[in-house]
Amino acid sequence: MDLHTVQHYLRPDQFSEIQKWPQGYAYLAGGTWLFSQPQPQVHTLVDLEGLGWSGIEVTQALEIGATCSLQTLLCHPWPREWSALYGLQQAIASLASFKVTHLATVGGNLCLALPFGIVAPGMLVLEAAYELADLNGIQRLISARSFQTGPLQTQLQPGEVLRRIHIPLASLEWESRFDRIGVTASDPALAMLVTACAPDRTRWRFGLNAGVSLPLLLQYDHQPDPEAMLADLERITDWVEDYRASARYRRHLTWIMMQRATQSLASLR
Image (cartoon, rainbow, N blue to C red; front, top):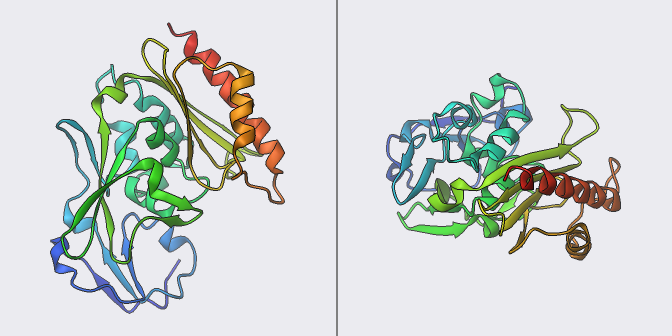
């Protein structure tokens, strides 16, 4: 879609070149959402592609640049023992066609903060942290659990940008899987779940999205039984209720998926 209100296009080579952030500025990463609908409030696009933030590095953690494409995460030659990335890859593969995943970025999906975002729940179970940077050069690290505060709402301040994702190496050797339930495969999910368990099955993490208004993490220091999972789900107050499905139904779908995922991953011993 053409954005008729856009008057200026900036493509800095260094983040420090961005000196101001007035109203009407917007960051451009992959653009798959930005160009999908009118943006009447935007008059200036700041393209992040020239900053070279698309790399993947392994230091004391796995570091993923914010403009890394979703397709790169799918095709990267990950070590076989990093099985925890499988759930994230399944989530990405469920998103859309190659045309979308080839352009859409990891950081863009996270910063958009849609209730049915596919990257956020995977980052929760991986215990990821996000490196943010503002226009003054100040950087801060925030946990994936704290980043999204609501639908289309994050901790980002005006002009601040997601620079890099950090994933602890120890989390990468967990087993994982992705589940979603929707009316059709192409519709936004009614409920979404990424599950991860430690190699010895003593610790479990469940990343919820779509059925709730923001990504949520449930953790257990043992393999949870159905009753314990249901009790925890009933304590959640952020269930989505709309014309597509009731909050009660979305909670029930999530409970079913948690049971299936637990049984499936437990059987891999």
